[in-house]
Length: 246
Length: 246
Image (cartoon, rainbow over all chains, first blue to last red; front, side):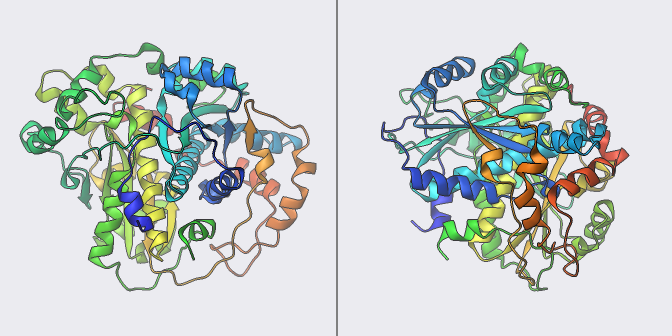
């Protein structure tokens, strides 16, 4: 496959062969991720690579996903405004901007861009990847496990390795309802408009459970809305508890 | 260059040739971006493509970057929890989860991943790209210009086209201070540790002004901390004003 075909073939991989990612390839992926753009070049993010099996297991418990404990590689991307705060402090010049809302959200964006960059580089090298938003199931616990200081916050995990499954391509909402020209366009009859997409999704087998088909999309949305995860809903307070003024 | 070399050569491009991005290539980039992972598959983001020259010009004013008005392509990535809220409402099942903190932050992540995916696909096709965090210089104004409804929020812009400049590679903080194993590692002497990086950065010419070198990194941090942008600092309130409970 050429690189664009590889990207068009992106699927979440949750089961990997036990073999490790070769050190040289790992370094290349890290280098690609490091080269990603960051807001104003301030690089307000960091990455924690998890190699300790006990720690990996503890994170898999936070995420309620047992397969995380078996993943060859696990990287956690974090907002890191602490490093730049320290750089400012050393120069007696860390103002409240250091931990303000703008810094926080630009750091969150930096972390995501670097994570996606790592994922693309891994896929271009034949590896499989999974994003783990589930590290936020209990952000305070993740913060404790990783020893994160004030002015930092976990954003997303990325697991990767040699794929041991070949899932289907997961259908996407038709582009006409997600990409607009010049102005946002809202609809009042998505149930009707997304009928074909819903039908397509109902034929899809999720990588979480290969033995059963998933619900159609519009039902997935409602299921999500009725599955309130109280700790995750407190993310604003959790971010403020890390010292950010958002 | 092979695809990894292309990614390792990433530079921000702010000046483009006037030629348009061919329609077929544009569609490919959109398709790649659409294929990107999203949190729980909920695709809580959307994209606005700006083709109206007046609108582009108005956005360039928000961003205080005149070159934006001349960019061949400008895509604005937004958190979009409104579409899924509508889908829930049609089924009489849009709970407060629809516009809660978890939904908001996962939507922000979705938008960023899709944006980086577009950028990578563009670069693999020989185009140049620029991220525009500056659309948040005045988020309420951007929201007004794009006609964004409640439960949406602008995240980042991406400009792209055929490069008309060949900038230098911009130095990055050494990986040892941004990538940790198992636990975050803080230092107390970054000024000393980043001396070589500072020296390297002081030799770099920024794409914003090719005629003068930039400050060293540790000075850029302090300059940023002393350049408080009041409207941007209100991002938390701006997000809440869009209906999100964060």
